[in-house]
Image (cartoon, rainbow, N blue to C red; front, side):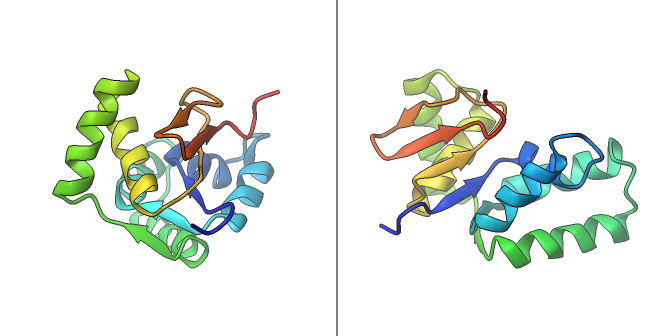
Length: 135
């Protein structure tokens, strides 16, 4: 397994394209990660259009930029879906967080960058949830 293979949760992407004080750290993390799930891209499109006020052209351009950094895009197929169900039950996380975790595991990541999930949680002995803004 590659060292420090990292996956991004949607909230990191949203911060990277915002005017928030967390924007620059989020951009730095995005530049160093190489994995993202289709779910994160879908959620980004929804939030960017509704909350960041981006046009669909801007959303598409932003997703192209994200995919330039995170060139390993993990689909959510039935295997990831089933693993997500098991993770949600075992770790008592939301189903959508569990899908993100299952996608990261399927890509053999050792870090999932997320502000929303439990900082420091180790999943299946090999994926660490890391909040980059945790003090």
